[in-house]
Length: 363
Length: 131
Figure 1: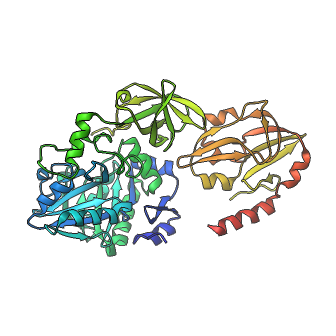
Figure 2: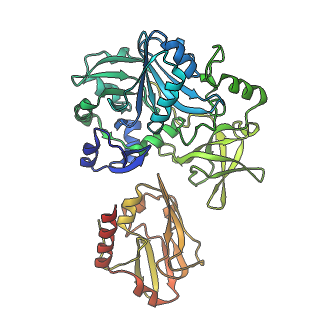
Figure 3: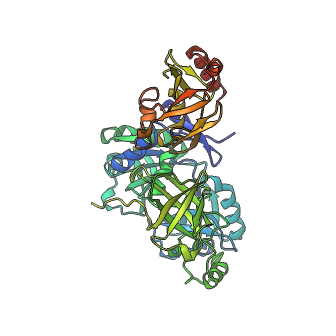
């Protein structure tokens, strides 16, 4: 039986269609995926992300542990900053992609994917060797997100903190609607927005406050369907689709994260070897040249041969054209290279484009 | 959920209207509701053959790819070309502008296998009950 977030009843009352995702019963859509997608691009959307996991790592040796677990340079993360990172195994495969929030001098909160909570927890505990204190707070925390160009006005109306001073990938501890929250300017939509970590018991109160405050700004509740089209337009990876233990961060286009400068982290030797010997595959962004919707698992053809596979694809609601992420041999992973996507035994032309597919206009 | 009385319905959620031996086929209001936002429609060429209970086209929503099944057998005399450019019409007007194909019937007796509006309503309610 899939797990339910503290907001399950609210979703049902809002008329959400529920699906199982990562072991959770989650809203896939309320009004409709396209309408929700559009609302986030033009106004604001409210998301329940309480299925995501939160693992806290703390103690005097916390930095040493985080540096070993994560491929990024965690030492660069100041208190109040966040960092996108990857947990690698010794073979250089991605155990999970995560966001690390440094919440105090010797404390980090790692936000992990719902389906990976147990796996990550076990892996972290094994590698920790009791050096740091690990706490799995996944059931204690609810996570809400307010995303979209109106998000700042909406969340600002609910907190005394000055959010104009809170830059992207920064977080602070404060109150939202009178409830304690870690307010982070992060998200998975390609828009400005906030993620609010609150106590599970406060989830309903904070959701309702955001919902009410957002109404005049055109805020709508958004399900996982639009969350997926939004993140894909923004060129963000989905664990389990675009990245997994068989994929390295180098292959997944995340080489900018990997900090070989530190002497040790899990996967370092394997990744160095990969870099020296050459990658087997590389992530690309594809844009369809004609009508046709690319989807997970579809074959990619080049020069009369099947050479790769689509890992995420959709009809982009914003661009009105099919877009996809996929893997091909590195020699072919260059801008403007032509591929054909095999859609129901037909081969439809597509071309490699730069990521992200969609970039918001900065004010 | 709208289920017009004058139409006949298949178990795969297509509707059929017959006039002068020509069947007009589309998907039902319930089907479009289940699919969600339709973003792509693929229909057969005029002159091709469709066979009862076999796929003749494809409808894609944001999330899913679904076959559309022929409720009757025959020759396609018309396909609704404009749907390719405006697939959202399937959500907006499933029984009207979103008709998909017109078919010259091979065997009018096949229509007997289809459901009336009342039968289809019961069928859908039973299917919903299983969710």
